[in-house]
Image (cartoon, rainbow, N blue to C red):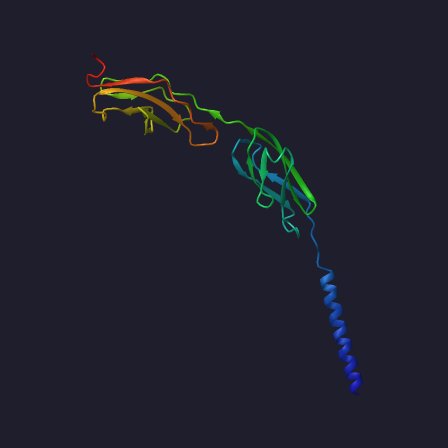
Length: 201
């Protein structure tokens, strides 16, 4: 009688083990079908852009994306293999690749040079000591250089009435950029600001 109970227990355990193995083996692995890179096709030199990838189906088992550069040297651009953060260091064309579970997508990125803002022109000083110049398109502000000392100007003018010591002052201006599309301009031609009777003989 005891032997029958033992055999019954063993048979039950074997059946449970078989059922567990069957459940594990039947767990479905869902393969990735498509990978699509999202992001800009044109960037500027020294710009950093984070690219993303859409992996389908959404319930794929392994959606981990690995990024790489497949065309263009690492001296031209670098990409973080896990985050997709691309940094362009040289003008040209680079091809990036996103791969997940054996499926991949590539994208061609054009890296442009950065333009320089034009130097301000038309500098003039009014009778009430207001320095003004022609506004530069895309400038975010200006630097006014007075005898080697620089001052900030938000618009295309600067009040010189604070200079009270008699003398001749060399004044020049440059335009500033706050983005990666333009470089700051070079300084304009100098003009002379006369304070008091200095230089008048």
